[in-house]
Image (cartoon, rainbow, N blue to C red; front, side, top):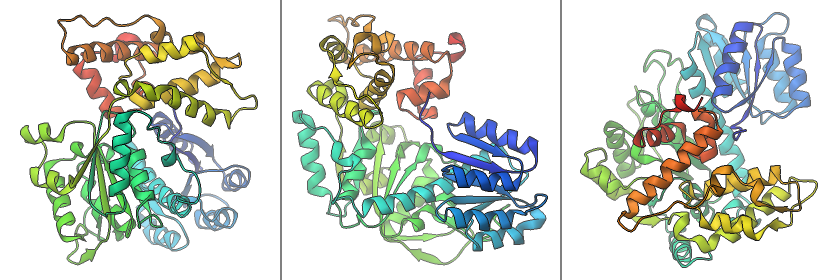
Length: 456
């Protein structure tokens, strides 16, 4: 089972809309609960914990505004989005005044639903991050759990700790799964901005036609369905740190606008004239060489220099194999905190298997494998039988005439084939297991000429 991105409650009296929301959100990794009566929705909030609730404004009996008010008395932090028809926009605005974060006008398509849900959950993450980071230096955090026993990782951490409080832009490069966001979180947690929000933005998930509105905000009437002024993500993180992950996936037009914002420290909302001052630190990351993207005219050189004041290059896991035993121990300890009967560790044969593997998915792949093994283990230690089949099919030979890239390509192809086979051709599920975004995973499949339908 993949990682759940969030738990969402949908309250609506229209069965067709409930089913459509469940289909779209479940497919994209959310856990969804449905209620077709407002009273049942309120009771669900009393008995369960949700990250977000979608509320139809027009329902028989108790209307959506009343449901919103009652839900906010139960859980004031719960993020709410109201669903409304166009004639009810004034009511939607009233709902926002009373605590709803956003509204979704009917009729809407799956893409609109996903954009509003993700934007609303970004707000929840901001609130949670703010509370979390206020204690970042007083309590142990995930960013403290960076294993740096190997010489290469010690060099990385020395650099990270030196620049953390310098307020300069940092570009973090490394393969998918090497821990770029964890490094960004550590930089923020050790900076003077630690008490302000940390906002990660996955650039590859922002639709190109909406990216300017999402980042910079928009004024009422700026475009169709822009019925109210909306703050952009850069304004929302005022005083804090923004982390632009997969920055290379942004289009050249967006890059030009982002460059101007970084140079002037001001944003202009779409459809507006007023310049809004912003005070943010920008961290960015890429899993591809941006110099190569520049050479191919896919990335602006001037933006590259603006982002790359300091570069942190994370080594792939196969270049820091001495960290693997410590990483395994850390992941087992994390899983033990959730188990009634904790594991004592990993057996020598199983550990040897992990040390022999090429790790195309890097640390994230290792974490997924250890979590899976902890769930499957029946003995007090993780054994070979608890590890995925593709790990103990034998080592992949690397003939002397092969280049390193050719050998890596063979490793990647074998891993992808095994993963698709295990996931029965389900690309979304396979991407989650690999610790990759679906679009990046599909590009990797295309590179290796693999087709998911062959494994169904």
